[in-house]
Image 1 (cartoon, helix red, strand yellow):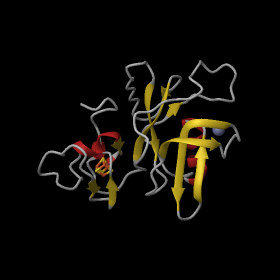
Image 2: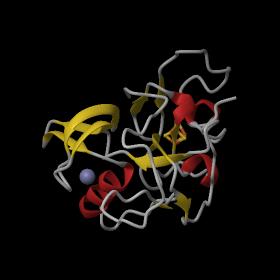
Image 3: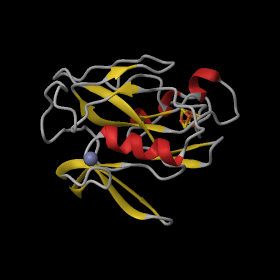
Image 4: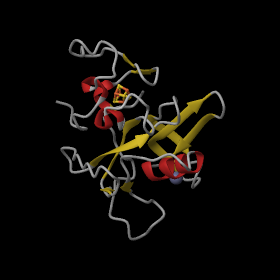
Length: 176
Ligand code: SF4
Ligand SMILES: [Zn+2]
């Protein structure tokens, strides 16, 4: 069983080949969003819960493991890693999937970081984020009217009172 929650694409009625079990390492297609799902055990969306074939909100992936995260959304799912961090779900930018493990300079706070988040799309090229929070802050500005089923208070590198988090957050998956 995946650690990030069982409500994932591999268990969804709207995935391709839903008449049979998902095979390990098999790439699926979401039949209602027409998007390839490369890591079905670590990809999620609200439709698995609503059961509606009308796409509802963004697709999410399991983002960086976050030791300070607290769920506040409609779905207060909290799944804990073996080391006590939360598997935070972060939204995709339409059909562009964030990738984990990038290094560079954050486009939100300008901090240099390692093992953060990158997002590449034809429209804007490659943009980098030091943490889940700065990625989600950026995403909200781009999608002001979209509802996120999973929301969190997240580790904030700019808030001194934020509980400790490793300066190089880790994550299980690095490419999507
Ligand atoms: S993206 Fe959503 S609707 Fe599509 S297969 Fe995954 S959980 Fe199901
Ligand atoms: Zn940042």
